[in-house]
Structures are given as structure tokens and as C-alpha cells.
Image 1 (cartoon, rainbow, N blue to C red):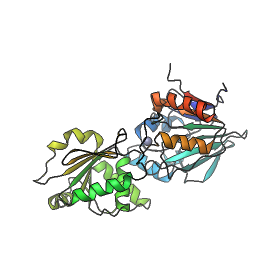
Image 2: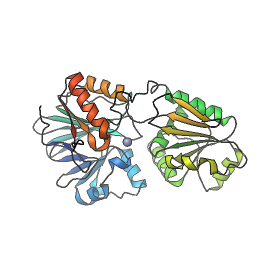
Image 3: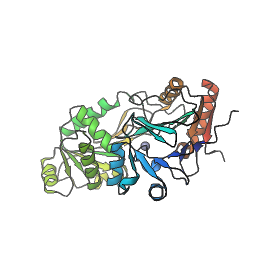
Length: 343
Ligand SMILES: [Zn+2]
């Protein structure tokens, strides 16, 4: 089968190599620029080392500011701020970031190499709301849900369903939502879009992210940080939405409730049976993901039609191998997994 260009691929460190000058989302020595597509942990591996050892750290204005509040200090001389659609030349390679629908600030990466080859990397994304990268010689894709059974037919309606469950819960008391960082911020914006105007109660870390979002023009509305006087008042009122990290779900029943009867909602990307599952009178599991499901992955690749596809096996595991073989067999596009997860 056709081999990928040796200058494009995924390294064992998780770095996506896009030519000889630019990498994304992992560390490797000898490159000029590291792009950070978004702030999730598996995309900022080795970032401190990249900040020390590489020339420039590139990202959207929002992503670079969110990194600062997560504790990464990027010297101003190393910050390469790239709004969506703005191109910069790095030793003859032209780098552009495109809009990805994933978490606020997320981007895809396109590099037109000095020799005319066009390569791209989706980062994490879901549809709609993500720019399709066309006319690429090589596309590196994230395929977290690259297995045929992993579909959420309700993915386009889930925003509305979730907003309804939240509104209903608020009629009786506070609502607690459990999810990963990044997703929490996305859900806050989603609820505001759907007219939910109860105050949000967050921890200090999310509070700092919200300030950055506001600075970048997002309207998050009324947000109070736990531990403050405002937070105590909001809690007494019983009308609020508390956001907690996914890992706190197992401690939900020991949450001090002040005699109120909170509704708890867990957001998970691994529920494929139904959009909403009520596990007890006041506990919901909601099938909500920031990643494309299998159908969306196939439709992205069908539309983009790269000459060659590399599936990110560092983050995709078994699904990456499955998706690569599906694309080669069914779509007739040469596809492989990197690094080779089959060992
Ligand atoms: Zn992500």
C-alpha cells in the first residue's frame, strides 16, 4: 500500500508532524513551531518542554489565553497568536488554523509545505460547525469514535434535550452538571443560547476560564465562584446550576444540599443507547460528546476526500485501527494508523 510521506505522521509522543517545521499537540525536538489545537490534557502533553525547547507556540487567541490560566507561561516572544483563517509563513511552510467545533477556541491545522504538498490535522471535532479541510495530500484525523456501533443519532438535537432537562430541574431546586473541563464551558454557552438564565456556580479554575471567555467576547452571563459571598447567596436561593468535574459524580450524594433536592446530570460520550437516561428520580445520564461519532467521521472523510488519511492512533486506540481499515475498504482512500497501535 501507499506509504505516508515521511514528513507527516503521528509520533509515539502524541506529536502530529506536519512537515519539517511544524508539529501539533505533542512534543518533538528540532521543530520551529508547536501548534496547540485545544486545551484538553491529551493535546497538551509535553507542552512545558515544548515551551522551553521550541521556537514558537501557536494557537487561537482564546486557546493561548486559556493555557495561561491553566498555568502555562508562554514568553511573549514565543507566542504565535493565530486567529482562524489567518496564515503565517514558517520557513516557506504556510500555516493556517481553521474552526473546529469541540471546545471554545479549538482549531484544525492546515500546512501548505514549501514543496506544494498540502497537509492537515483535524484535532478533535464534531459536526456541524467544523470547517472541512479540502484538497489535502495527507489528512491526520481524530477518530475517538471510529467504530460503526459508536453512533449518537441524536447528536444534533441533544443540545435542546439537555436544556429541557435543566429547565425542568430548576423548577424544583438546583441542578448539578458533571463534565470535563472544556466541555463545562461549552455547556455553559449552550445553555445560555437556549435561554437558561439561572446563575452558574463554578470552582475557581472554571471561574478563571470564564473570565477569559468573556474577554474574548463570549457572553457567559451570571457566574459565581464557590466560596464567595455571592455564591453563598445564590446557594441559599436554590436557583442555580452548579458545574462540577466529571470525577465528582460518585460523590454527588454527599453534596451538602441545604435541604434542597438537586437534580444531578452526568455528561458522557460513551452512552449510545439513548440520548437521556434517568437512573433515579433526580439523576440523569446524558449522551453528550465533543467528538464526531462514527457517521460524522465518515461524512467528514467522504467530503474532504484527502489523497491519503492517517488516523491518530495515539488518542484513538482500537477505534483508530478499525476506522483506518473501514476508510481504505469502503471509501477507497488509502488510510493507515500512526503510531502503529497493533504493535
Ligand atoms: Zn479534546
